[in-house]
Image (cartoon, rainbow over all chains, first blue to last red; front, top):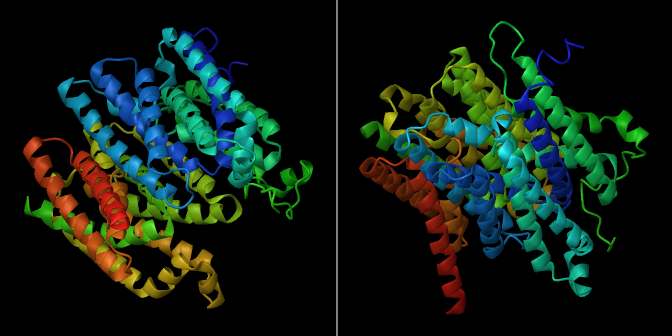
Amino acid sequence: MHWVFEPGFFSSQPVHVAVVVGGVVAVVSGVVGVFTVVRGQSFAGHTLTDVSTAGGSGAFLLGLNPLLGFVGIGVVGAGTMDLIGVQRVRGRDLATGIVLGAATGLAALFLYLDTTERATTGATQQILFGDIFIVDPSTIPVVVIFSVIALGAVAAIYRPLLLSSMSSDIAAAQGVPVRLVGLLFMLALAVSVGLSSLAIGSILSTALLIGPAATALRLTRRVGSAMVVASVIGVGATWLGVLLAYDSFYWGSSQQSLPVSFFIVMVTFALYLASGLPVVQTVTGRRASDRPTEEEPRSPHS
Amino acid sequence: MTNAWVIATIVAVIAGVVGFFVVLRGSAFPAHAIPNGAFAGAAGANLLGANTLVGLGVFSLLAALGIGRLGRRGRHDVATALALVVMLALGAAFLSRSSEYEPVIYSLLFGEVLGVSSTEIFPVAVLGLVCIAAVIFLYRPLMLSSVVPEIAEARGVRADRMEMAFLVVLAAATTITVPVVGALLIFSLMIGPPAAARSFTDRPPLAILLSVGIALVTVWAAIASSYESNWPIGFFVGAIGAFSYAVGRGWAAWRRAA
């Protein structure tokens, strides 16, 4: 087995932490990601990752735990987007863009101050691209608590959220507070993105959010089972990424490992491409004439 | 310093013109994704010792084509998100292999306008002219297909071809602008000023001019403040962009109320 698992893989503590944190984060991202894709909010999800970059670098500057920065500012960003109009389809693209622009500006400032005022090196790289192997084991309980909060929020609003994602008009007619449900979901999204920023870096957490969910929605149309499939794909991709990154240290002669996030993204993307192959579509009973959920959320009107 | 002013002016004009169509078409996400992809190209070029401008061009073109291609089968925002993260992951891998210092990464992401040399101005000016010429050439069909896609289709303007053409123009604009304001902040410049301009006027030619004007003021003010305070230019571009949008929204609300 040693050519698959390079020496020391199972006894290394950073690997244990990476497997636990990565697994938990991947499950949360899978569940939240399915709704993100169905609601067409990939851009909002990605924006929250950049917003959390600003939070992470701000926390670094103040010497706080980066997770608090990632999650805290994400919640503020989600609220701002809701305030300036993410709920309307027209103009939400723009509202998201403005928040994104302002957040990257802040991130630029904080990262600059991190490197100059505190004379820390590696902050830019670490916050943007993450390093799951240096996550502090004491962070695990916090990660688990935030994960439970995010999953609990999605579970609590599951039915109204599903209805308002399919058709906000019908949901509103049935007495669902569409705006409130949307805001609650954005908050759950912010927490989820903050968690994955910790694991694979804020810039790449979009991969874990969108990749497994989009793949799952190509394989099954039911939102519930898509969540399970997305979580499994996410956990698989994360663990495979951890393994490959660990092994990559021994590849070639450079004695330099490639980043975990690189492998996670590549595995996720390969699975997404594979799920679109005609063979897979036939096996899972999806014909070309079927318009998958991923293409268009089915409206009960049609 | 003169170089900085010249190159920033070119960047602002391009961002103002191309950004108008970004806002009109609701292409904010691709406009964010392509510069990030270009960042990976610059990191790759650094690693291979190639010209950065070539790396930027190749990768932003790849990102544009990837988004257009993936978007044909899946949902558009999903395709954009995936293309974006694949490019960024490549960038992260390139960076981990190269021994570049942190300031280099930082300036690619957040811009380094004050360090522009005079030899860099010529290729940027040429690419900029190509970009503007492409927009002028595409102006009528692009406008038609952005505003009323159904009528455009009926007149033989294919929406998917127009989208692809626009993404390529976006890629060219990105190549020019990323080394100056950085991958993350060219986006602010392409969204803030045009969005503000559209709140002031509904007439497209006027809105484009206004958008260029606001972009110029944004960049000039950002350079001056960055020079004075030593803070990164990207921060000022982001802040002024968001501020001008807020002013535009306020103006529109006030006019509706009056």
